Length: 556
Ligand code: C2O
Image (tube, rainbow, N blue to C red; front, side, top):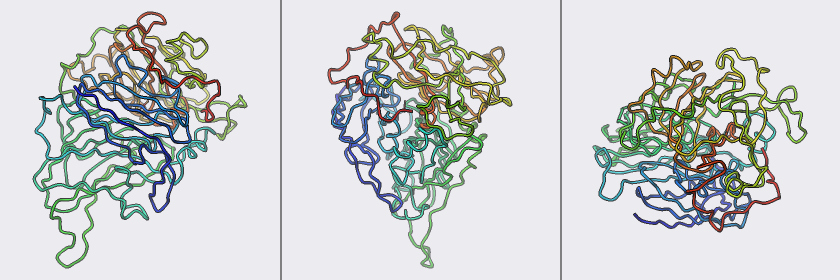
């Protein structure tokens, strides 16, 4: 195994898109940021320096961080952010994982531009479970704003108003030529007729699940979130923020230029979103650029589903089956049986510290089991646990909702007003855990891409409506469920996941639509060896950014 050393300098960088130049944060001046390429078993050492103007952290999305929770990165969960001028070195090892992951900033909305691919190849001497593709490309889907995303955040989330939608979607940072003033900003993927390529699709968008298609070409899904799946063929991929999907594409069409395109999948009713389409081009070698009569040829556009096509999304997702069960089999006996509601809602602005823009002196909020998560502002939960500092969090996150009702029915909004708090749930090291994540209709139903840090999990079941604890478990897939780190709740439905709590530390679980994290759609697991004990965790690195008494300027 090798150790790879990288320097990441986070810096303000002028980036021009849609004919406007915006100064955004980047790593090493690159947008998207550098691709990290390693093998399973390798160690990464990334020295990060914050030369920007905002507090920031970096997160290695999907990396388990076994015994190294200090390198995980979510701000105020596992570390305090690097202040402008500070440096912090992230050091971690990849254990038993292959495929595509990614990295991104984990502070406010900075990940809008601070992100990149993390590609994990098989160990030396081992191979992919499919024929070696002729070429491989990371394909990062993102969002672009015509202004600093931090200002968009300030306007949207902090005031509790509706989110400002982005000005474009992007593929590898480029909106593509369907946008006005964007004709040269198109990513090209070159192919030779007859060859097969591997696309490592990553949804790095802040607030949008996306449909992705390639004109006239089928895709074969082979992996997701850093784990292989039984191959299946599809015309369209639905991918939530945080998720990755690896697909093989065979260049089996007449040499030409074909659009690859992505557009919104939005299951929430009455919520504004960007309904534009981003494109890249799959370009065959020797593709004619003019037709016989001399007219220039436009690439063919793929058929994309309608933005509210929940059937296509559900049908796509239902096809995932894990390829290798030997990587850890599904826990059959459950020690911790948890049921978490995942809700959007509104909260009364009785506290003067909250600025409100919503109707009747309310603001949007979001909660899990009626708790709207509040980030600490002075210390990280991990550091407070490790050093036994009281007052940073409480351990009373409820294992089941405090109130039962028809979650997906006609729920009166007034039924449930969340409490705000920094509540964690304790898990005993080594326990087997099942969580049913239940979407609710308190404000609107929505497909929430839920991400768990420090773990990946088996997705054993999903369904629409209210979870039925008598009937539904009988239908669980305990044979070859897909392994993921981010899973959609399914709009107006539920999803059940299982994992073994074998990684001590402090681990955030949240919706990967960033506007929802800001509203509080998050909770934290504290996985301990004994009460307050984090035995096998390595000691904090000496350069860990220290807690500060000055509270963060931007508070949700
Ligand atoms: Cu991709 Cu909490 O993050």
